[in-house]
Amino acid sequence: MHFYARFLLLSYLGIWAISLLFMAVARPPLPPRLANYGLVIRVMGRWMYWWSAPVVRWFDARGLNANHVTFLGFSLTAFAGLLAAQGWWGLAGSALMFGSLCDIMDGELARLQNASRASGAFLDSSLDRLSEIALFGGMAAGFTDRTGAYWAYVAVGASMMVSYARARGEGLGVSCPPGGLERPHRVLIMMFTLLFIALFPERWAMLGAEVACAVVAVGATATAVSRLSTIYAMLRRKEEPAAAEPPVRPAPGPEKPASAR
Image (cartoon, rainbow, N blue to C red; front, side, top):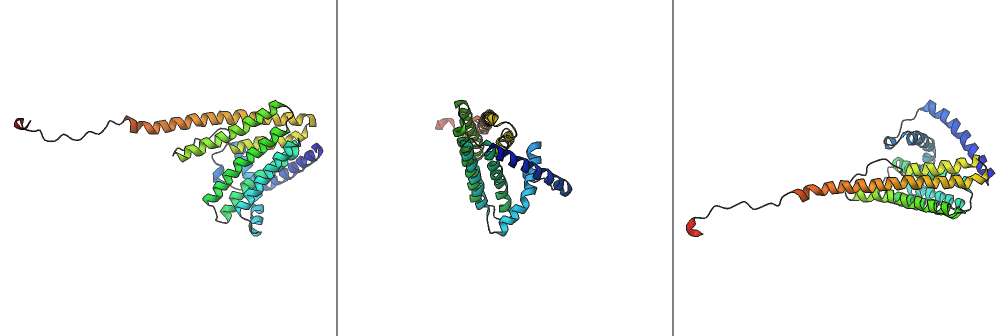
């Protein structure tokens, strides 16, 4: 399986190099939703959105909608977890790559069809969480030592807390500050690690996957702690003006004459 993973990776690299040449000529604009991310996400995102545009139009011509692509992406990521559970790390990276592409194309298809709805956004966010659980759960099952499984458990737990802190904060009227190890960063770390460990001897594959889980675990934990403390402080600041205002006293009435006291 390691040989097949290496063959697939080299094929992907060749296709990617050729597509970069075409992209340099086309010079597609940067999607506005990527403007707040760092350089790596912007570069990769520009290529992925440009590359996936013909596929999105193909989905639209076949009558598929964004929810269909969302379920396809979840299925591929869950399949990556199953491959990782068997110790087939490189093949898991391939499945995760295609699942991640579906995660981009569902939003693009919804915009193309003018069908962006709250129900679709809720489904997409929910399946994103389930896909991370399936991926890290499969990786935990694939490790032959407890250390790797522990890193995978911490990675998935911290990843859930990063997303929960943002959702809960926004539900309470606080905009979550950007930064940290967000889901696109976590996916890229896992995807590239699982893909490129195929270039190394097979005995190193599990160690590479374990290191990737450890990086995500540490980074996501730091991000979750930062978000929790920041959002808590922002909520406290919103509460302070109401608590600091002195109670309103009624205006004094006309003074009564001495005979009436």
